[in-house]
Length: 374
Image (cartoon, rainbow, N blue to C red; front, side, top):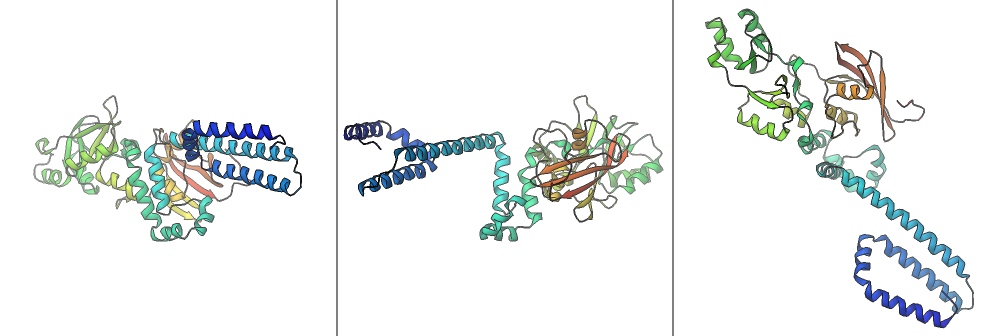
């Protein structure tokens, strides 16, 4: 790169000495940053072309070479910095979440941003045809099950059906007959005054023959704290032989009930009972009518988006998400929006039941251009 032979000889000698001393660290560095190899090869080609040109009598100004090399090093430094920041961001995500996303990507799950890449990749396109939305959603449900809290899968206190021993026998019998569940909590006056868990058939027989429910026939309730792990719940449900599990808060109050069907719905989606309606109901193209108690992860799968569910959030329902966004109990007609990957989801509160968000209209817009952001 210079015109003095002595400087060239000194530069070559110094370079060889540096290579001998720093060969191992350089090898590790190159293995970690393979793009540096391409950059170095580009430098060699550039210098070699300059030397060949000067050999044929064409002088190439050295400033051009220095400027090209400096610009290339600057661009590569920015590239390495961006990759390091991306790796740091990935490491902040839970290992299980990264594993789930990788498996889903292999199974063909893709976002709107990846549609063009899918068309160019026949293997991923074939996987997308083989594994439908239901299969991918089930895999996602299995891999994310341990990350979910009990609040996201349990039946909340307001929706628990229980038998009150203070009610007339006729009322108790009618209540049990109208319920599709095999086991019901039996209490005296209040859900917190829990006496046990009764089998529906046995309680009907008691009411028919003895005109009252025999407490000796009740099973001891299985009560777990609200901090319980979902995987631990599965083991308890297996040991309880189909009996429901009651969830209590730190003050001992019953806040919910978990059954085996709740675990199954967390994996495979919603399975409403005969007397229930689906929490998510499509009303048109890109429009849904959603119950406030709808599972947020299931809603993500229906809307084909990500980002509604955050690992450290304590809520697991759409109502909890909206309360977090609004910061207060919204009024009928209040709206908020969620932007994700050129898609905007609009939530509009349609009905309230006391202090609970009962019904929400959800609309999906596939382009955020010209749309208001809240």
